[in-house]
Amino acid sequence: MTIHITDIARKRHTAKAYVPDRRISDEDMKKVRELLRFSPSSTNIQPWHFVIASSEEGKERVAKSAVDRFTFNAGNIRQASHVIVFASLIDADEDYLLKVLAQEEADGRFAGSPDFKPAMHAGRSMFLGIHQNEVGDAEEWLARQVYLNLGQFLLGLRALGIDATPMEGVDTAILDRGFGLREKGYKSLFVVPIGYSDPVNDYNAALPKSRLVEAEIITEV
Image (cartoon, rainbow, N blue to C red; front, side):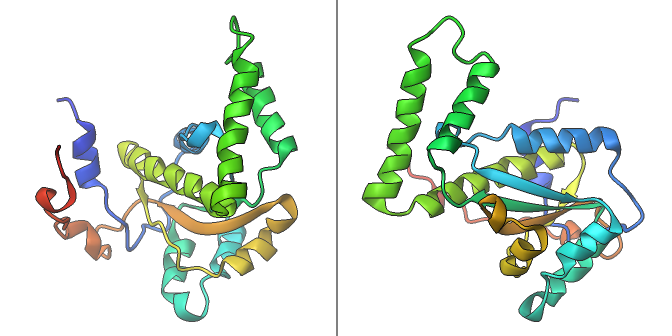
């Protein structure tokens, strides 16, 4: 039986409880890392960094960010198999753009087309410049690329049979300090515990999906 991508989208849900002693295999974690790497981004700028907490000590470091208003998120962080901190590049300077360009060249993106390399650099610089100098939202634009990554990530996880809980309910300043993200030029945005839903305590797994009707959100012209 062929499973269609829309079936995967319908079955995906935000897990509210995990089986704490069920671990994601090393083989599947390799695929998880590939999902993070191979996400699309505008002009292929890839302005992200990820911290993967796989040990109890690592997850506890992430759980420290679930404080004050967000204590309800601490349980899932601690019980999940792994927890991923998603961080965004704060400023894409020329050195960073050249690093991306060099990687594209090493990966063979410009083979047989010598004019494509300078054109790619000019195009990426142009779009970044629009957000830096005209719109004035460059930092936010970079962060939006990380959210593009999240969308593909969640769908890909479900295809692997892995559950997830995307959460902005964390103190990102604690994460930034705890993992030295600002010193690396990044800022944390959200965390995503991943693992396997607890069939007894994950109430969200049994609830029907609720979405606005198609006519409300789609206009055909």
